[in-house]
Image (tube, rainbow, N blue to C red; front, side, top):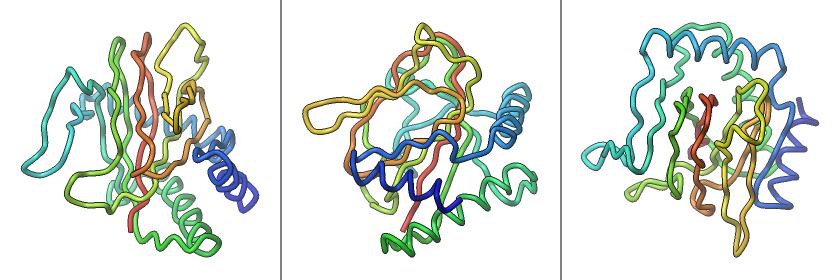
Length: 196
């Protein structure tokens, strides 16, 4: 795992956006995708909001995805294996880059057909606890016509990333505005934040 972690960190240092094609194994990716689909079929994914606490807003014109929070308390063996990998990555990140990350939070995300998330930062107005954003895509057979790209704005340019199966993305939560373009078929991922 150390080589995979180093590759993700090095691509982040070089480009402000880290990209890995094998952060999770294909088997674990497949099992997590099956979990997400099961939760979705049980109507357990809920509309995602913007902001938190008293400032939480459900504006479907700005964001139209659905989410389900992951938690070790669910005692799901695949989700716990995912958290084991994230814990190892956090330790490696702290040991090599002195980031001081103390915790994390992740959720399953599904974007139904026609949904999107307009340009935003992954940082709340009243707290800067989210230090790094991570997205792991769970989409099989994704083609250009399917849309749903992650568009990250870097200086005067932008980077478009297709949400293809197994791709992982890593960037500083407070620095890079980004959006999810309209998707033409259901788009699945695990999305989360490493926190101080």
